[in-house]
Image 1: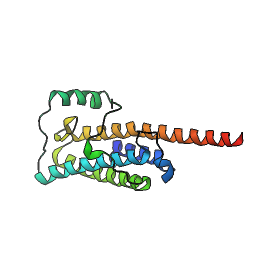
Image 2: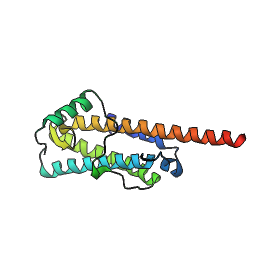
Image 3: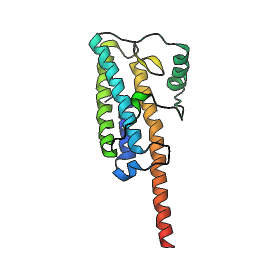
Length: 180
C-alpha cells in the first residue's frame, strides 16, 4: 500500500479498532456517528476506484480542464492541506446508515481497493498526469488523489476522536452520578 494511504488506513484502524457497535452509533443530534463517518469515507474510496477503473478501461486519462473554483479548492486542499469543516457531502457519498462493524470492514476493504486502482493508473499514466476529475478539486494527478484522501481521512478521524472522547466523558459522568 502507498505510504500516504497506509497512514490513512492506520489512522482509521487506531481510531476504531476498540469501538463497539454501540459506541460507533452514538452521536450528538444532527451529527454523523462513527459508523456514518466510516461509511462516508468508504463511499469516497469506492467513488475514486470507479473513476480510476474508467480511466483504465478507456486506456487514457479522463481529466477535463480546471475552472476557477477548482483551482481555488485545489490550492486550499492540496497546497495548504486545508479541509474546510461543515461542508455538505455530495449526495453520492452521503452515508445510508449501515452498521458500525460493517462500515469499519467496508472502509478498510475499499481503501485497499482504491490503493490498487490508483497504483494501476499511476503505472499506466504516471503520478503527475491529471488522470481524472475530483468533484470539488477538478482534474488532479494520482499524487494529489492520494494526498486528498489522506487529508480527508485525517479530517474525519479528528471527528471520530471527538465522538469517542465525548462517549467516554459521558460514561464517566454517568458513573460519577451513580456514585452520589
